[in-house]
Image (cartoon, rainbow, N blue to C red):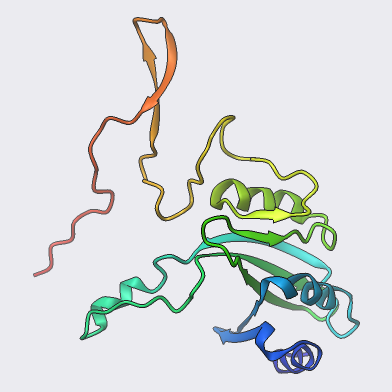
Length: 201
């Protein structure tokens, strides 16, 4: 089994509009339409030719400024993202039987309230991974058995790994002498440069 065989098999099973393939640095990324995600994952896991029984990781990704750094190389100075959707979940799969790894990526259709189907029914280990992606990126995995925050504090309302979330956060915790207790308040400091300025000669 090699990448070419995987691509050929998936193209024969699913419509061409549901799948896109990219090979870079000896790795295969399969981009799947949201409504085909579960079917493709189930096929990769259960088919005897694949047997991707291990889910190594699920990562949330914010593609909102992906490729923007390349604008400096563009003589026209125009930037267009290669992706039309903003949020995606990336699934890293391992087949021990065939000693192979693949990456499956699915974009959420709605940028304001990103949602994707949960794969916990296929790989139980996805439970906490999907909770992390929800907690940090706000991607809601429907049919997840217990989708709640896992890393941020109780009552946290935003998603800190989104690119529009400020590096310094929006609130700070301080000791209030007047009330003799620790309180949470809106940050009152100005914007700080977090990347050191580089002076080119």
